[in-house]
Length: 392
Image 1 (tube, one colour):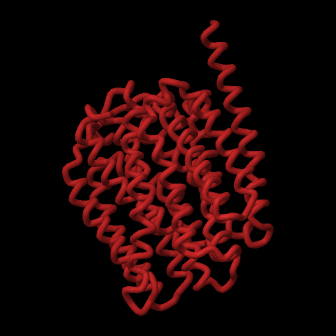
Image 2 (tube, one colour):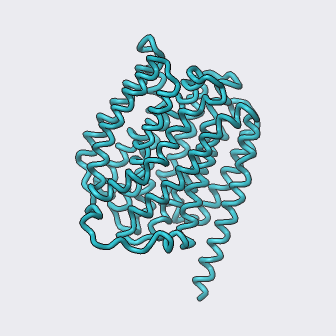
Image 3 (tube, helix red, strand yellow):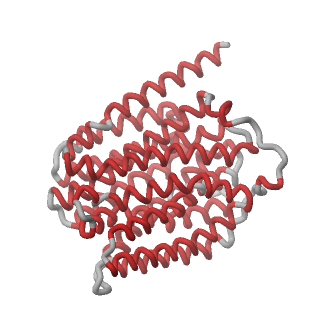
């Protein structure tokens, strides 16, 4: 990894600052929501709104990025996010639940832009290094695991209104990200300067490699988001664990999401992408079994397993996606891929609070099993397709 270009490391550090927003909202969104919402079942709506906002923003963000370039969008979104943080602070001050939900929805554009960092990294290296570049950038998530929750708790009581100081600290992250991304130099010109658009999406999405890339990343994200969104509600509000204990479990989870990225090239070389994704499914199943108990120890181990499972499925899917498109097709394929992933994740996040408050933690866990079995079937189907092609 030490030989990777400067772009990769600028994106890695910037991703850690951007991703602190997501961890911050996941950690505090339900807790703030519970204090402002008219009904307990709406507590996780602020968390769900950031995912919904992400899904809604992906296609316009990527379209504009294809016209004016990644760098301008990366810089512009930093300024935009600081403005939205000001809106969130206003919502807290006037105790408006729906204005706070609007702010978290608008944060979705930030997350949609952040998710293009991994593609920007892939474009900065040879295709043979795509998995290495992806994993290197995702290392930034390790920093966000500490940064997001620590900012949330550090600034909680700075002002009369709880968590206003936390959002002020969060805004500093995007000031720093702006200065870092100023030095980012994209390796591709905007598509407005190109005369071809490649194959139609209808042809591209029918490819087995696109189907497995999309389903692996989507299932990984949906299950991770669903369980992680429900965890602070189940732990802090229903089971009565302290905010510090809940923070520790969420931090451990986010570390587990990104720590394997340090070793991803070795893992891919040892197992291959297909076995790596199968291991991800097994880790998710282990998470369900361990998490069935409500002890702090079981929450902790289950959320670590959840993070590891996400990493294996997401890196596997992301690394396979470039095999489904040519260079001229990258923006439209990346946008439809992320739109579908985060559209499904939005549904999962929206339902998490309702499920955990109405049916309990156990049902939240068990309801993910059919999706895992579906993904296992898709993997075996893809492997059979690969075998047939090799034998022809």
